[in-house]
Amino acid sequence: MIEVVRAGQLNSVQDMGRAGSRHLGVCQSGALDRHALAIANLLAGNPVDAAALEVTLGPCELLFRDAGRIALGGADFAATLDGRPLAPWWSVPVRAGQRLTLRAARQGMRAYVALAGGIDVAIVLGARATDLQAGFGGLGGRALRAGDTLRAGPREPSSSSAPTSSPPSPSVARSPTSASAAARRFGIRAPAYCDGGADAPLPIRVMPGPDHGLFSAAAQRAFWDGVWTLTPHSNRMGFRLGGPVLARKKGKDLPSHGVLPGVIQVPPAGQPIVLMADAQTTGGYPKIGVVIQSDLAKLAQLRVHRQLRFVACDAAQAREALRQDGMCLRQIQAAMPWAPP
Amino acid sequence: MPVDMASRRRPRRARSEAPTIPRHASVQKAAAAMHRPVIHALGEGALILQAGTGATLACQQRLWAVAAQASRWPHVRDAVPGMNNLTILFDPLAADPDGLSAQLNAAWDGAAASRRPGRRIEIAVDYGGASGPDLEAVARHAGLSPREVVQRHTAADYIVYFIGFQPGFPYLGGLDPRLATPRRADPRLVVPAGSVGIGGQQTGIYPLSAPGGWQLIGRSALRLFEPAADPPTLLQPGDRVRFVAAEVAA
Image (cartoon, rainbow over the protein chains, first blue to last red):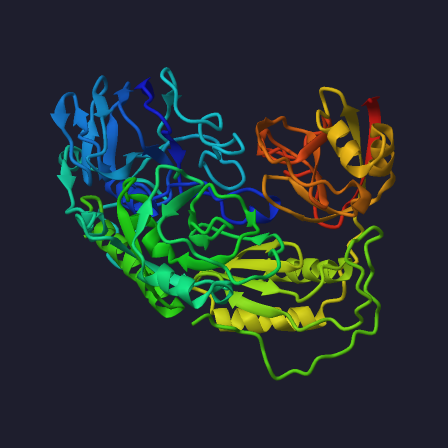
């Protein structure tokens, strides 16, 4: 059992979110940085889609009433465990009575705290993610509050004597069978996408959207060549960008249509919005482009007032990026202390 | 750069059945020919099929039929109807978008307007007063009395075209054009759940409390979305809705 001593703000239980309910008007929800969630889960011995805590604004302090294991992924929140620094991308055992504190992101925007066994809350419409807009799922359909308690789900011991030809089941949380393995503290090198790119505008790969041709030639050039700034009017529903005004060629309003995270809408004012996990399921604004799924993680870690630029990409390149992400996860999984030899 | 995946080889065919025009539709096109749909990629994991000009009920019924089929295809994650269009979401590493486009075109060609017998649902509404703070504004705009607005709003048989914007939120066809009212210049920060509103030529009912710019003419206690229920939404595409005045404060 985990007690939330200090909740911070905008912090919530998230997994990979809901697929398959958009036709009911239910948005995806889930982690904004799905790659960091997946890695944190693997480091904790979980399946990649277990529910974890998404932390956006600290300080967030958790008290562990039971022994277990945790892993951090995503942004560096200057985390400490009983006052001892705990870096992102590290997996450590926790003893009953220990406290984990996440403070403020030094780089990046969102961190994921994975608990071995995953966070055990009810599955609603196929996921444990909190739908913060509609107010259901996760822990009471809302952000964490001080005094909340969370439970970790069960873990199964890995069969270290299993034949090497059978890969571990992807849906079962693993725990080390030996005491020494259970005591292991280990970490991985931060994934490349977390570099933040220092001062250069972050390149984000985008497939041209169905309505790209509705924009003037000058607007199209401005979209691809321009430098865009992430404005403070950005949240889990959408990231609003500041930059050149994108003028649309005259035309009728578009009828309402299904959209999804990654879609870049341009409302009449001409400033693009990148839809994110909590975006509504339908929209009516022209879609100039769609961020490729693999780059949404990078975008989710971009700090407000930082800059980005769009790089044209096609479907084949987008799929290859997803394959690379999958390969990265398999390599990490294979390196875990509880992976079969 | 955008890839237009519409097949160019098939000739246009005249439809033998006349499209059913929604009773109070403001767009009255006697079009007999259904245009070829256009399919665009929407990122690497989605396709959007646009049915062509004129949002008619018959076209929407055909999209419902295509959506029902597509949701059963391997690797398709969701089929989301919009107004005269359909967005298909799929696993990009498992499904081939060109193959899916071909399947969509074939499904469209073969789809009769979905004859799903939509259920009839009556929604009791308290009109005006605190429940409908904009009823008088709508009446003034329409040149009608508030009671006449309620009469016209409750006289129509609305059809759910699709669900979107919020869980369970129905996009309804069939608003009396006389009642069409522009959205508020100043959207409200909070529109209470169950509010019945008019926004432009559309009418609907908010399942959840949210910010919104529609003109609120009444409120209903009916729950349109219950995440733990099966199905979780009260309404689905094809359902017929009537509003019934429970109370009128006007």
